[in-house]
Length: 93
Image (cartoon, rainbow, N blue to C red; front, side, top):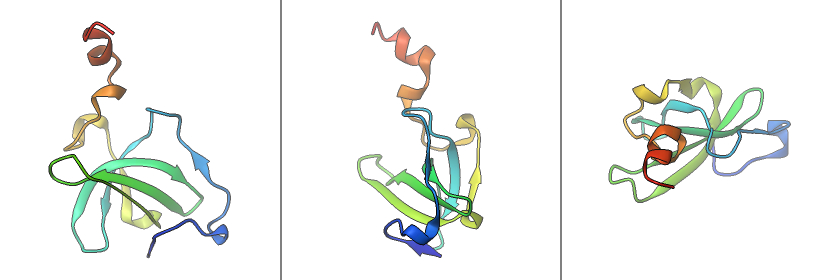
């Protein structure tokens, strides 16, 4: 199932460390598969965040964990450059 908002029945929420959210692949309500990040989770639900094809529109949705699989950063079709420390530091920051 998919949920537009967190519900107290979901249980205690754990949040990932800022800019260190795990990458995941999820099946969305329309049946498509997208790569993104899990920003929060409970024992059986995750808060999945992804962008549209152009990377300009961020979407977020609570969903049952069975719809989500954790993947490595290198496997994701969209990667956040700011969680790659070598890239970030190489820009002269």
